[in-house]
Amino acid sequence: MTFKKSFSLKNITNNRISWIDGLKGLAMLLILMMHTGSDKGVHIFGMYTDKFFLRLGGNGWIGVVLFFLLSGFLSYHSLYAYFKNADYSLKTVTAWIKYRFIRLIPLFYLAVLIGFLWHEHYLWLGSLGYPKIKNLIINLLFIHGFFPNYCANILGIEWYVGVLAIFICLVPFIFKIVNSLNKSLVLFAISVVITYFMKQYLNSLTPVGIHLPVYKNFVNAFSIIENFSTLCLGIVLFYLYQYITNLSVCHKIGISYVLMMVSFVLLYQNLYAQSTFLLMNTHTVWALCFALLIISQMIHENFLICNLVFKFIGRYSWPIYLFHFFLIDLYRKNIAVKTNYPMVNWVIEFVFIVVCCCLLSFVLTKYIDRPLISFLSRHSNAHK
Image (cartoon, rainbow, N blue to C red; front, side):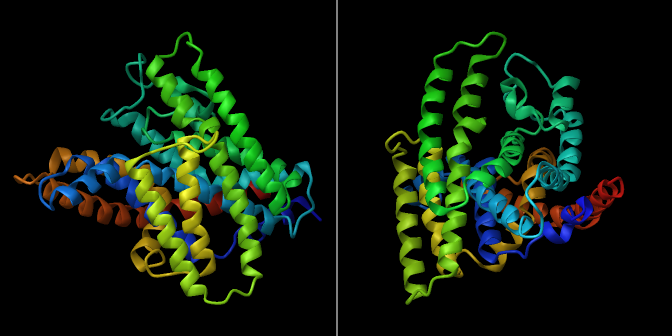
């Protein structure tokens, strides 16, 4: 088998799974709720509903937890399909890793370059003042996930990409060893224990040259350490998916809706009383709640998740995630509608941003992302 054959797009690209797109759409909407400020919009729907929006908006970051869970699942799904047609070797592993980064490069580079020149909203800068060229280079090399000072201060959300980049480099080697449901459960349990003690140790340190709040946010939210258990849980879900798809299940619709309702109850409870379980961090507890929701969709896709709106937003969630802050800034500076009702203001902003994000993301995907991915893939193969 030649290297070129093992690196072909046909071997890597898989058919889309509807419930994956639906869940990505849900995750993206949660993030947009938080970043458009639903946690500040109150006094219109009534005290109870307002309180729910305050909680949900303030915890919209859980959408990223869902993204990580799906990333763990999809990475194994991609590896499983890829190595059906390629021998496992360092060369083929490198080819898979390279293709995964090629899929990230066009829109991520574009977003980072625009963000570097935007000079509007820089987050998690600490004592840096503003991003430097060094920061830009570190992001373009996809190594910002290793640096607290540089993990999230050009776009404010690029820390997700930094963690994902580290996982992309690790997961093919995990795939070689962890090749069953039992082994994936062991990996998840080990990851929980290791990350717990690593966080305890890192939180006990007072770093030199790093703004302390930036360092604490890195350790407790933005690092591979905080999110590795969630990614490992995604691997568990992949093997559960293999099991469920080969299983004859009676009353699929009923079981799916029961699991989904249980997931919603647990998510709702955790929304009002965030907690840890055994040695699990907060992100992993949220991930377990979402895992039930994912299993419910594996058994039977239902309209609450697999509807046209969620699936469309999920299909274009990558550009929406990268570029939504730019549109929010433009809206607030030039278009923002102001009424006497904060919740009305938020609803208008939220709907406007969702619609504009979808339109922009469709254009970016069709005219920039797909053509450049195709070009980079062909160019990469041409030298092999």
